Length: 594
Image 1 (tube, rainbow, N blue to C red):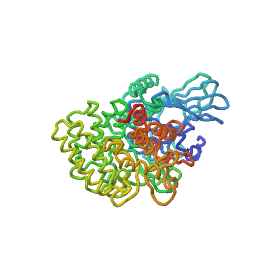
Image 2 (image 1 turned 120 degrees about the horizontal axis):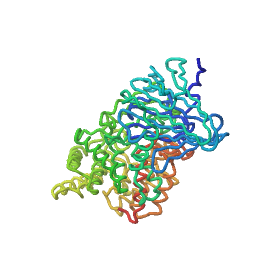
Image 3 (image 1 turned 135 degrees about the vertical axis):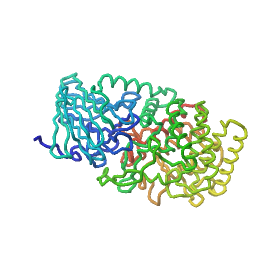
């Protein structure tokens, strides 16, 4: 009997979010830690149970780790989600090139890992311990064929592993069955590992050929990410686009984040499951790629959002699974969670009404129309959204931040902005007039009830506070830059809810802003857009650069940023932050505001 490995949660403890890289193929994603540990991967799809879940205190991981002391690092290959882990060891340098084969299939993943000793002989330990449903369903029926290819079952999934022919299968207990492999590589030597997991048995008797699969992935990655040379910070803009593309499924749905239960604030209870497609976030991404002049992700967003409008009409939910299904109810798993948080799957957003989705949908559809990419179904979807606003705009809703139902000012203003934008591309003057009239009605009513005596917008008729979301409607075309309400709101917001060019959503209570929550990176980029709207380009750049650099070592953004500790907070990567970063990079490249 082999000696058991140390408990995974001790041998590979959670790291600061700054240190993780992200792999994705459109249908699922993985987080890779600095010791080469894939500690998070859900399969077969984003919202499925995790196969590797040590990130939140579960079991199961897939590690490729140099022996002995080493200094970790890594980088993405340009404009891709192909990651190169790199370790400087006492013996030499070793790299592990890794990716999910792209584009992914909904029911099957192929995970590629190529280990390379670059300068001197190195020793590497490989551990493969798959356990589906967050560690509750173990490996079974493992067999090695004459070519050294392992096949097995894990939960309901079929597994095939190539490159681990010399691995040993440790079976200390039913839940501990895992593969271990020791590699000794001479200078210049490479070793390929290919892990396949699928809902069905492998389609043939021939495993994926590493070189062929790598070549297909490289070509597909290259073709899916545009140059974006007409943006500022083009390298980071390409990386943001690659992240958004990796988070968008074949069905068109884009997950809000790849993970669940990563706390926004330690011990505050604010950790959620974001492995679903939020209509709002998808619209942000679509508008961002429209601003950059790139169309494939815009088409995906229009297709997904349009389908939800056609299916659910005025009862559109704020979020869905990436294949258009309902978001499951929120529940816990009984796991320890990421330190400072706790485990949670599902999301209570499935019970909310968010008026904002209709306004954002109209802004998205209008952006597509301006690019001449809105077909008949898309125009019908716009009419559905207009009708929904007409019938529901006076109802309380959960708002952009998903709080208690109120007459949130931003919800109404963003709907008015969407109405005006879609009216600009209306097919006939009658509709144009009707839609502008509805926008004017909403704007006049909101002005009468939600403008403070000193002239700036307040959060709601019964809430006089400021809110970062109130900067967005003018940027989206509702009001001109010189409108007194626009200027007063931006001035009051930057004076009261920002610091050192970091931005907060709103004031939670009397505590200092940074003690209540982290800086909200989405809001930092929105402020940059608002300053650009005012024609203050230098100030817009200051906001852009400050928030652009609030990322991890791999260039990934989470939802919030702890300024004091310079740490990422919340689920990773957060799609809407990457979307606003991309939109701001495209917008700042224009000499004058739109």
